[in-house]
Length: 274
Image (cartoon, rainbow, N blue to C red):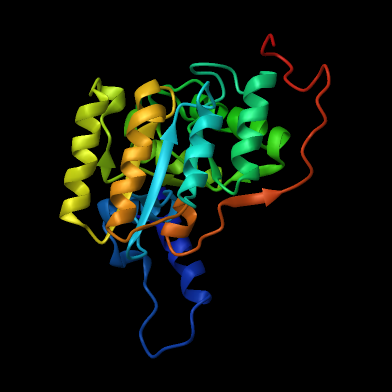
């Protein structure tokens, strides 16, 4: 039976096959696939890539979620002391609104210092509870803000709480973005003290994995004031270099497009009460 799923899967395979060099192997036929296999192929072809670790040896990608916020500029200054680059996964309206004059300056300061700006979506909602339409809105609202502020659309997005499913992977892919998780959590958002987070960083530094993709939150004073300088010191002593997520994945492009940032006016943040 030629169901829609099998036909779509075959169409996708045929398109891919036509782009490959000719071989002596027989091209796939529609009846080669079961319903389950066809659906799996469709999902695989339309799902965003999920990165959970860096691929570049001796690299550490320091990442921060939930900003911009009070300590963004302090974090940027601390990173500069170690010649470190980081990635900021920003929300549109979580702790504060991204369009406020203070946060506009903070995100511009981070970008000007060479740090990567990525999306954490608008309101920090659990992707797995949202319709595709609502999730796409959460993504595009944040993308629009970043384009207005910096003139770039981010190529990477991180789901709040690290939670995603097949449907949200499809939405991210349709929006052109790859998903980034982590392989080391500082624990700050889980209530860990700065002392405990430092101990966790010391442990992972002593273990010396090939690379580290960290999760931190710039909305915690202890992270900004205490944990970050400690982490940079102990990891640098182990010979790691501090790079952006795009760099730690082999030098991928951090942005999907670039244009001229918008000029702030009354319509700059329309609809958000700022």
